[in-house]
Amino acid sequence: MARLDTIIRNGTVVTAADTVACDIGIKDGVVVVLGRDLGDADEVIDISGLLALPGGIDSHVHFAQPSGPDIVMADGFASGTLAAACGGNTTVLPFCMQQKGQSLREALKQYHAAADGQCHVDVAFHMIITDPTEQVLGQELPALVEDGYTSLKIFMTYEGMALNDREILETLSVARETRALVMVHAENYDAIRFLTDRLERAGKTAPRYHATSRPIPVEREATHRAISLAELIDVPIVIVHVSNGEAMEEIRRAQIKGLKIFGETCPQYLVLTEKDLDGLNMEGARYVCSPPPRDAASQTACWDGLSTGVFSLFSSDHCPFRYNDTHGKLVPKGRTSFRWVPNGIPGVETRLPILFSEGVGKGRIDLNRFVALTATNHAKMYGLYPRKGTIAIGSDADIAIWDPRRKVTISQSLMHHGSDYTPYEGLEVTGWPVRTIVRGTMVAGDGIAAGKPGHGRYLSRTRSLLAARP
Ligand code: DUC
Ligand code: ZN
Ligand code: ZN
Image (cartoon, rainbow, N blue to C red; front, side, top):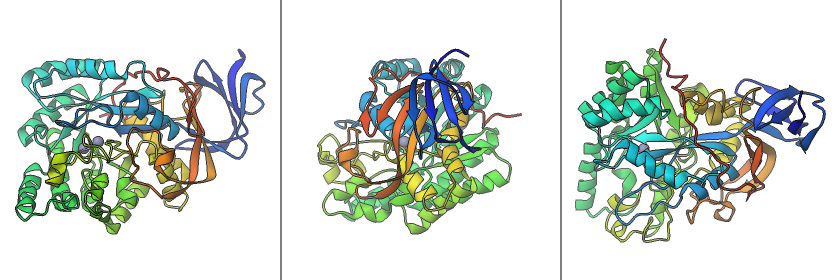
């Protein structure tokens, strides 16, 4: 065997299936051998007492996405992927959003130009379809799926983005024909508009009313409808950012029926609640995201969804804005109503430590499920497996080294994202990613950038393995 580039020695290797004490041999960015006594290498990394996990794959992040007049997203691809790397991730899947009237190719050109040469970790794009014309659905989308853009998101809410039921059905039909995977933002647009108008008329405009304007039935109804429409077309879908037990039960029921309906939840639904939106003045704007964080019972239900397998994905939904910024959470119009506060919170750097500490550390999930929920299932769901998402011979050497005993208090001072706050300030966690390796190269170590932007590559993807039909 040719001399190895790197050996990672004396650690415990954890995958979605196994926990094994063995060494990892890396050549040309790929894992080439797993075992003991691997000989010598150009670089030997001793990780006694530490864990080697597949690098996290965060399949739901937003970078450099236009977010409305005068609003600027706080992360581009350089800071967003650096934050991802420091948080133990080796691949991220941001969205490429079609503007109304824009061709999908044109949108992709812009996002590729923004990402090119900037990324610290590997990157692939989901499309967001906001304008499902005949040309887009009939010509553009099928060609893009063939080119490796094999997933797309649709919205059931938001001005200028929500698709009506007919448009959803047309989009799902094309997904069925092309074997693309559709991610659905499930909230009822008309119900939110009705409740928002009513709250504003009553003078209830503070950030806390964001949660009041989109209560659980708004999400549950849309989840049920999305599942029903997918059942009509006979096509798999992913319900993203599920926040509560009622929506989760809709997914569970569909799964028991044998439908290929997948679910994703996020850190904000495990450790935040609606009460966090209560801050004085505009403080609550820091936590405005959709769906909103709920209550303790919803948190328990989301844990149940993670531990029983109703949810196969745990993502951050990193959608960062600065707080103390008139182009962010404190946009002047936002003071007149929660309606105008940009939706989204940062989380790409904290997703993994929160699930590790609150989930594995507190005995709610085991380490193998942690790996499945944060890496392996994302790779299988979105067409990156087995190149990504596991530690196996032939897979890319995308590895996060974890110190399972390290205690950290999450704080903005530790973060690398472009936002000026973390919604998880003060949360104490045990377990931290201390080194992140992408294709054999260290990109972050002890919270410091170790690589250069540009090491991260664009990934073309195959169809989903999990959503494949027989
Ligand atoms: N949906 C997302 O997926 N992210 C942020 C905002 C939203 O509505
Ligand atoms: Zn969404
Ligand atoms: Zn999102």
